[in-house]
Image (cartoon, rainbow, N blue to C red; front, top):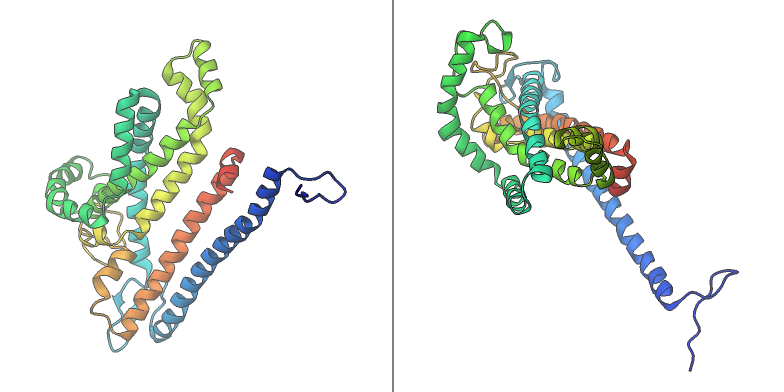
Length: 326
């Protein structure tokens, strides 16, 4: 007995395989849409929670939250502001990005275009494993090894490059903005390298072979064919790494001097971040103190949201990546 196949409106009957695909598209589209809606709902719920919990503390605050440098939310008359914490968060993350991005791009290019296949495979696995190392491990390594080690290089920079404002200052310590930034740089380097590696591997082989056929060296081929293609992906990877650095908690909490001052002298005992301050102060905070910490978390939430939105806008400018990310 023949089984009739469904027909399209005004068209021929669908084949059995096409009919099965059309039946599978509907639930898949529904699940995909539902997943996107759930994700947006979760983000909205987080934002609402932060706002609701932060409002009482902001109302009790006796100073301007965005510009005040003092952080005493547990006092009888609470005084707290996000100025110094936001400054330390942005500056330390920016220094980490400046240090990590060139190294990560070099590692990605070596793996994708210079290393032998077996070595490239091993290095790729190592980079992926470094990205999975818990942040507390980086923090403990930074406290036990990097803090004592950085005292010598910091003294050298202060003695010979002290005329540059960021390396100036009368006091040089191991626990400084520079040390915390280096730990953040090591943490975000695997992320930037892994994403950049995948982007460079997607560069059109025809363009690479054409450049080599015209007599270009391997570096000239990379400069003309690979880097222009991968530039949006590298920028996006750097911004994602920047977002990771801004939200890092335990590693920087162990290293930052935990001061509430604004200073560009990265070798002095100055510096703090929003995430580190939340980790250090939440356990002993009063109701108003917890509200103040949640308010600072709301600011960090907005900053990271802006950074990730910028990454999305950059990736959307390149149609190859936009199609893959859609």
